[in-house]
Image (cartoon, rainbow, N blue to C red):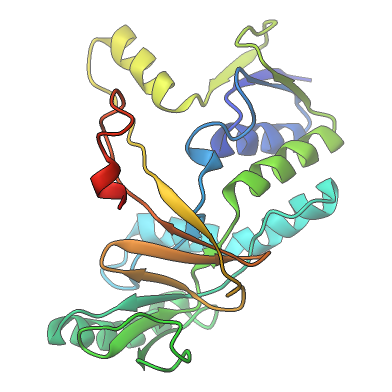
Length: 260
């Protein structure tokens, strides 16, 4: 039996650890802070597809992943006895001009070709969702039934618990492993910094964002993307709004204007 150590308790590390444990490996997950401490512990949890045109392997892979998500999270939540907050809510996107409306209407046809009968793409007028949607410059929105939502923090907790239920080991509060046949690094921006330093070439950099969580019960409404902002209605009567895109990590108040 292969022994594997996975460093990083975010969604990537947890998913790899769970998949390897399920396939018969002996897996240890090591997280130096807490489960879902980085980007995986955010607020939004928007699982949204690429547009169903100019199809390629990347879009196909994402499509298959989104379709598989419902079964995957049902399995995880059944094992853990917890809720990941997963739900295939669909998504409204405001259409800013006539060209955007024209493209959205064309995508109604290409969605049939590439999404088949598993999801729909339509164009809907303002008011179709009884005023839940914001005002659109054209009065129209695209709406797809493939987009889903998830509660990032809850999903990480559910996945960590499911991993332990099937025999995995979780160590929190340390960055020291015990040695294994295979080591997997899923340590977010810190891992990118380490790779950049070791390889002497830029591998990537951290990008962070801030969002807001509001007490507002719209759990049966689709998510919205309008003017660069996501609105995600979660279970439990909360709506997440955001987020900013920030690369300044040194001044905690320097991005307040972006957040506002």
